[in-house]
Image 1 (cartoon, one colour):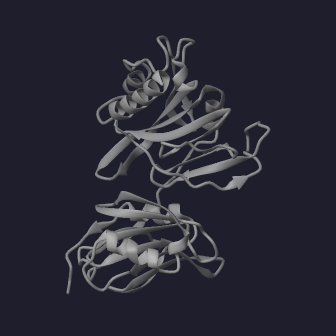
Image 2 (cartoon, helix red, strand yellow; image 1 turned 90 degrees about the horizontal axis):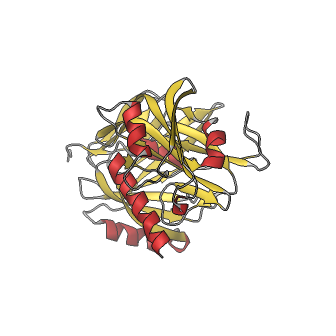
Length: 315
């Protein structure tokens, strides 16, 4: 019990001290990773919010109690970001390495390196690292340019992993070049968000919108906006409407989240056929409930929806 409590306290204080944010991940099974020698299949982690991708052992599963941590009996990884405004990479690394709770032991090894052409640092634990940290090591990158997340800019990416896997995972890290975007707005609902310029839109303001991309000459859906109620409502009533519909029996979990500027519900479902794995529910400034339904990779839709914001309602 004492060890579990210590682990919880260390993780909590580290996140608070470093100003970190976490995100979920999407995985795509693959039998191998180029340039990485191993005996198991690996899966891809692709994160459009933090604009990074990497690979990890495919048998690792989400770790209960964490939003963005995958692991197994042989190791784990976790990705986050550090704001670090006004601080150098060395200052951020030393702050992480020599935290007062000694998460990496009393004499961690801190080494400045260049990886993927970017300045970075390793933090490797000393032999007296607390057992509760599960051999945690860290790699901190300086972003090529600050990444906007919410209302803040983040200057550093941090990858935590067990020391046996960190170097292999780090070799696969790649940063995204963000796509040019354009504004989508629905003045009847009072909603706006940024979408890639490659997306095409077919919409009826105040009712619905279909977002597609052209792939091999065929329009493929990426996101649907659907108005669930013609009258003012609440998130709870909107969720009740979904529960009573055809997808209701397949709901697995409901979480209260923030989507852009709005309180929202994230409704997870068992995917099958046209039924998605997740739907986001929001009450628009017009008072009408809206469902955002990903078509294909939910991460693509979520990357656009984190820019969701209010605009003046036009009756």
